[in-house]
Length: 506
Image 1 (tube, helix red, strand yellow):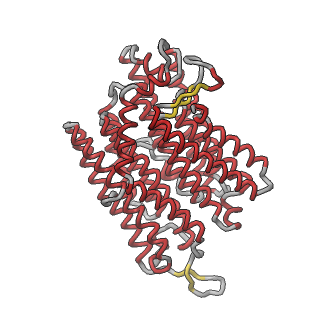
Image 2: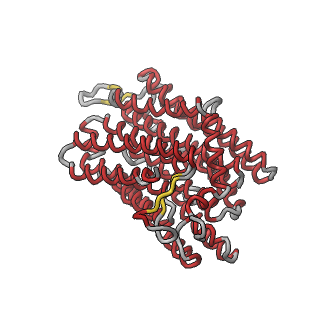
Image 3: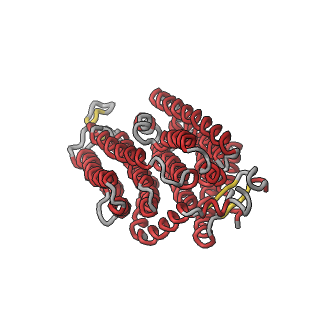
C-alpha cells in the first residue's frame, strides 16, 4: 500500500492545475476543490491506519533506490499531522465558500483562491511526508508562494505590507536553509534525512553543532519561536478570515514538525536541549504577555499562537518519550483550537463589523450561537479541565516533573503561568466583545444602528463542526495519547531510519 503515500501531494497538485483551468467556472472549481480535499482526508485516514498497524510506509519517487532517490515516509507522526491538516484545509475551504458573493469577490477571488489554496495543501502534505531535506525545502517554497498570494488577496495596502514582511522573512529563512543544505551535503554526501542522521553522528562535534544550529534557526523562523516570531503578529491579522485561520493552524506546525525530525532523526543525542528549553520558556511567557497587551482580537490570537508554540518546543526539549508524546498531542490540539478561534474571529468581524475590542459589544445577546462558538475553543485554549488543552498541558507538566531537572521545573512553572494568562486573554475578549454595551454606528440616514451583518448560517455550521472536532479530541484523549506515545517511541528509537534505509545502505 506504499503507493498511497504520494497521493495527498499528487491529488492536491492535480486539483490545483484543474481549478486553474476551470478559472471561468466557479461552481466547477468549488466542486473540484471540495472533492480533492475530501479524497485527501480519506487517503490520510488510510495512511494513519496503515502506519499504526504495519509501521512506517515508505516509497521512493520514480523508483530510484536509496541513497540517490527521494523518499516519502508515512509514519505515525507524519500521518496524524497530515490527517489533521487535511481536515483543517477541507473545513476552512467550505467555510470560505459560505461567504456572500460580494465578500468572496473582494477577498477570495475564485480564479486565484482555489488553485492557490490547493497548492498550499500540496506544500503542507509534502513537508509532512518527505524524507529528504531538499524536498522539504521545496515544500517550504511551495508554501511561501501560495502564502504570499493568499495573504495579499484583495490587494489592500495593509495586506501588501504584511505580505511583503512575510516574504522577506521567509526568503531569509530559505537562504539559511540552502546554506544548511549545502553544509549537510558537503559533510555527509546526502540530503536524505535518515542517511544524513546516520552519517552526521560520525562528524566532529563542532561540525555537528554548526549544522544543528543552522537547521534549528531555519525551522525556528518557520515555527515562529522567540526571538524569531516578530513577523507573525503583523502578518496574519490582515489576511481574510479563512486564510488567517489555515495559516494560524498549520504553517507554524510545519516548522514544529521539522524541529521534531531534526531532534529525533538528524541529531537524536539530545544536543541543544538547554537552549531549546530556554527558548521554549521565553516563547511561552513573552508571547502571552504580548497577547494581554493587545486590543484587537486577531492580534490577541496571533500572540497566543506564538505563546503556545512554546509549549511544543518545551515538550521537544525535554528530550524524553513522555515529553515528545505530549508535544505531539499538544500540536494536534492546537491546530484544531487555533483554527477554530480564527474562524470565529472572522464571524465576529462579520457580525460586529470589527475585531477591535473598542468597537465591539453586546454579541452575547445579539448572537448567542456566536458566543458558544467562541467560548468552547477559548476555554480549550486556556486549558480548562477536562478539555483537550488541559490534557495536553497535564502531559507536558508530568513529563517536565519526570525529568527531575531544575530548568524543566522552570518550564513547568511557565506552562502553569501561561495557562492562567491565556485564560485572562480570552476572558478579556469574552467580556468586552460579548458583554459590554453594544456600540452603535451612524447609517446613511443619520440614524444610530448596529454595525455588522447577520451571521451566515453555513459559516457558523462549519465553525461549529471544527469546534466539535476539537471536543472529539477531548472525548478520545486517552486513545489519542496512546497513539502519540507510540509515535514518540518510533521517533526516538530509530524506527524511522530502519524503515527508510535498506540493509547495507549507510
